[in-house]
Amino acid sequence: MKSLLKWSINITICILILLVMLSIYSMVQSRNNSGQVTSILGYKPMSVLSGSMSPLLEAGDMIIVKQINAEEIKINDVITYRISYDTLVTHRVVDIVSQDGKLYFKTKGDANNVEDSQLISQEQLIGRLSFNIPNGGHMISFLRSPQGFILLILLPIILLIGAELKNLKYRMTKDSKVVK
Image 1 (cartoon, rainbow, N blue to C red):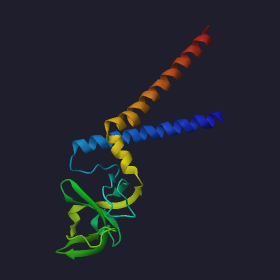
Image 2: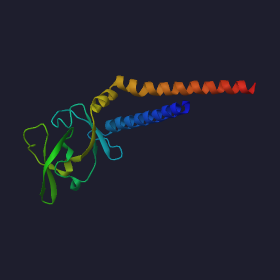
Image 3: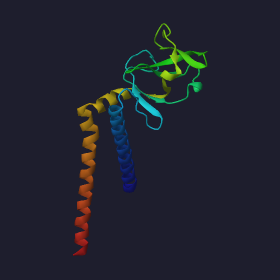
């Protein structure tokens, strides 16, 4: 039972370390490449800011968007696209139009009464919704704040280092008793 608990703790620590590393990577990438969406293995995490896709997506949810080719988009897919340098929109595809050898998408928010006024070009496409994490966007916003960074990144690292130093001290004390 004790070894099962130890394994559980080790696995949890490894997952936390991986999440911390991915979060730091994401924060550094977003600061270095403003205007670009950070990608981790082709997946792009983002926060939902409005209720235009309610009830599927609510403000404060986190969405994970997968980069794909425009040719793979189908009607009813939920896509994220860029409408300006710093504005992204996630809406459902209601029609696909081919003009001059290029694909364009007609979109609409699920909670909106009318379709979006402009066609979305394949160049504006960021990707297709893979999945969402309810309220996960609130967590990311908190993580990016100074308090969140301290609480969720620095504090666990300090506790982990402290626990390892305690274990090291215990082993050194134990080894010195065996030698005597």
